[in-house]
Length: 587
Image (cartoon, rainbow, N blue to C red):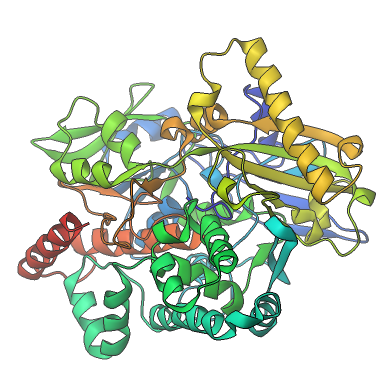
């Protein structure tokens, strides 16, 4: 789970909380009829085109569609699912995306309330630059003829840490590393050494055409073109950031800072964070930078959904998939809560692996490889999250957009409610809030067990009590007078995230039970069930927008090969998939 990249929805626990998300768009089951979402600026209006218009589906058309066989059905419209769907659609595959909610995006969606446009999840957007090979969101949008205006973020995050340690992660790498060296001058060589390895890994990734690591023709082709880069990645694949950091750095507080850097990436410390994941994030923030989409993060999913429809594929909303249909052990279709059934050559699940195999395939024997996965990984905790509108004057003029707060003790980093992540997207795009107001999106780790067994009255009281404590901490550390400046507040818990995002226990992906061997234990997109693929944060390479987009690209390539849209070798496939399966057992 990536705090910056997958933080949770904070809609209130009632259906009316979400209905206003539709005020700017008309959504019809089986269509994608959208308009323009207008955003206030001081002197003008920016219109962000999200999705094209298509006709309303009739009952007759709906019945006809139920009878046809698609090339792929994608369950869920998170970023990973939408990237997989659009990548297949541009290869002329016929794709159907089924989304249980009213709008696309999942934890990268949005909702509106009282003049505010809130990002459901993170406002820290990686993969949105105009250069390199890891700008996967930009590439995905371009593939379907979409682009979005973005606002560069000059500071990725401002850390407020124990012992009054304050570090700003500047967009320019030299500025960041010089600031860090100024805090730890005795560790100059260690700092340059550790982050130098991060750049070595990032540059290797950034030199490759990113497709499926489960497709041997592509994989061998990349190896022969870029052997040193491939060997570099293979070398670091089973390694973790904390082990690499300790080769260069000795200062305990600086190592704790590296833990905080990795916690934002993975919600675990550096010793449990795969080095490849850490390198992607710790370097892309300087290479391509953090760039916020004008109008909010929800525009990404809307734009991808519109591009999908333009390519001749479909996305249905209010389409709650309850089960995957198997025929002689092969995944051939899905059954919705209302009884409708749809069929396809392949099924791609954007649900977590726990939801896919525990709910959508309920009653089926858990495949051995999934048993192994669940031995190595557990569900990461969920979050308590608070969306607030505040009076603008409570924030100092030079306030950064993103903050990470751990006030007193490094030991509290991974504890529930121990650390706080704060995003203020209106620092970059004031149009998201009424004039004279700012948005604060606050979130901190929390488990669903802490919110169960409560009466409705106790539940609401506890939400207010815990939220008040978090707000008071920010008031003391960053913004005096914060509590009295609040004009709007909505609190979400792990129960909220489970309900609206259909994630088991509200989890945001896998977390290693112990010390993992880097990414070696992470499953890819194929599964032990023929015709069934997984995509998203419980697949390689893990959590975060850039990671789930990569997962989507890889999944689309593997599926395309399996349905005849890309080259394929059955003999090489069998050998490579067997080798990858064996390697995962070593984790």
